[in-house]
Image 1: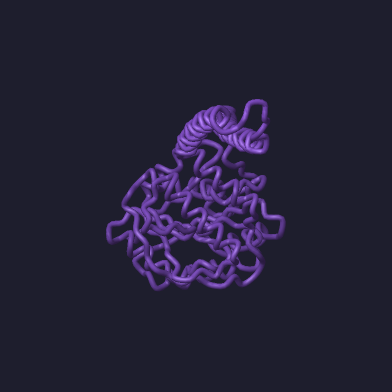
Image 2: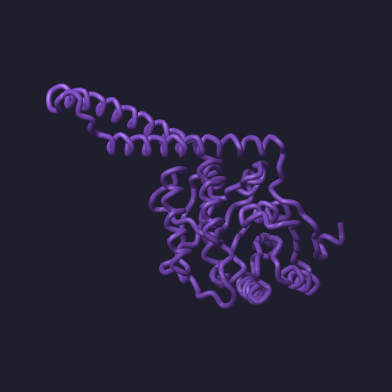
Length: 316
């Protein structure tokens, strides 16, 4: 009996590129005769005609399921929606813009068959913009420091995972999923395989600075308390510096400056501004944690599905 491979593809502004990605998957799977496959396409409330493209692809292919979200929830939420519709023993996630090479999926599947639980694609040279590459670098640093990712492990949006990893991921029901964090806490048996990265064929990236910042905040507030510990260390350091500066000021006043001379106003103001800024930053960080807890306690949804299409959905 053939093993089933499930593809999950979050879609946003991809009406022009998505048919090419699907065709590339089809050609790649023809070479892997020991597997059959299904594709789950999740439209993250794209403002263009992406869902109409998905609807057409579903009508032309029995093994494609389309999911239309009611608003833009973000890439990781879209992945979580797709994970609830997969049936395969191996689940593969990739982008909708054609930059992640679907024709090299055999390398990821081979890594799984050789014993890995999760296989991430690693690019020798990324064809993203300078802004996206900078964002990836910051995300790499954040996951290593905050989430304990091994330094040698490369994380990307193109990866394959065993079924049990996906089942563990979808147990997370709160409003702010971060798939990388969920993978890292599910298993340590993760490897990389080298693949090529392509130029974008059409459109522009949907990631803005605001979305990248939201993704980073989501990562380290949902899966790590290290920011709070860092804030504690910074607070203790500021207190020690303040105490040391106070001793220095007393000594300087008694032994160096004559009585009655007012000095140090600029230094005092600098210290007040610095300490005040640090306090506001730490309070904001604590507020971020509390706000996310409050939203989660109110059962804010990860995603809301407006419509599903595909012959498998019609048979239910």
